[in-house]
Amino acid sequence: MKTVSLCVAACLCASPLLADCPDVRQDDTQPPLVMTRTDPFFEVTLTRQADGTLQEARQMDGGLDTVTSYAADIWPMDRTDDNGMLSLRYAGDPAALDLTAVGATLTLPVRLLVGGRAQVAEGSETKIVHDTTQISVGDCSYDVMVIRNRLEMDGMRTGHSYSFYSPLLGVILGNVVTDANYDPVRGVLFDTLSY
Image 1 (cartoon, rainbow, N blue to C red):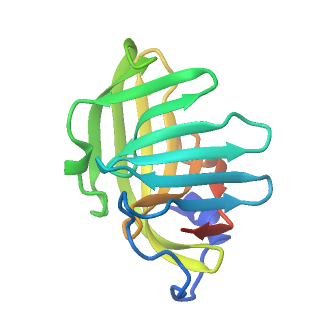
Image 2 (cartoon, one colour):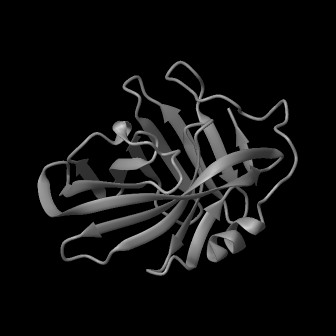
């Protein structure tokens, strides 16, 4: 947890939730939740769909704009950018897994598809509910679950990261890509959050 503490230390906040801070999980009838980092510019717009999935649209300086859909808030399913679409298909229901039980190890077999059809690889995605902490986004403070992510696909390099998941909002408020020892490599934490 030492490495995560270093990453999160800069965004810890002791102030209570403020009146203008988003404080409910959105449904498909509400406006999108927008999170922005100012320097370098990076903006994520999160929209809950009627089927319960979460759609994330990313815009950034000098990079590809992408759209990703998530099952059960944090399990990526489809990612589309100028290069096409990559999809993960899980053998099991991500919504049946408890993302709030510290110590839980949640693993699902997964297939990687290109263009929604051609299978490229198979493997597993594991999410370990590692700890809890509190982070701030602007003037807003949230309790989050610190989740270790590991994506293992046959013939590919294993991906490791931490996600800071807010059960209150049903979204990831920050992410840190790590090495295999979960030491930080790069990350995204936001400056503002609003509906």
